[in-house]
Amino acid sequence: MPMFRAGLAVAAMLIGGIAAFLGIVVALSALKTGSVSLSYGVGDAAVTETVMQAVDASRYWLLVGGLGSRPLCSARCRRNVGWRTISR
Image 1 (cartoon, rainbow, N blue to C red):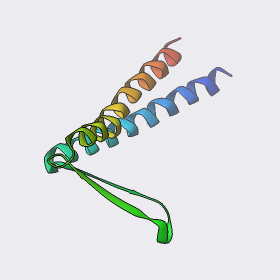
Image 2: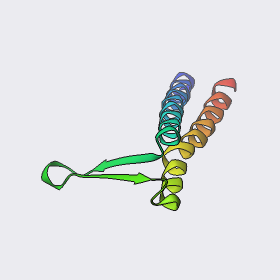
Image 3: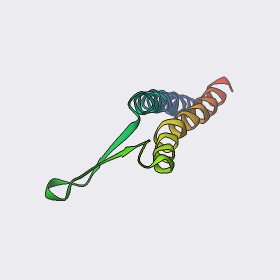
């Protein structure tokens, strides 16, 4: 059972690292271009949205925070929990 817990901890740290990388990429891309593009839906119902800082600043910063900064915070928490689990 200890190996299973260690494996889950390492998996959590790996997923956290991936989330941190994607958060950094999204945040830097959004800050560089001044816009965030979202796509959702499937097939004919697919919708692509572009939110620009100059047009809708409040929604832009909400998306940059939610899609860029929140994964970084989540990754840090997962890393800490994983490290504590392995260190026991």
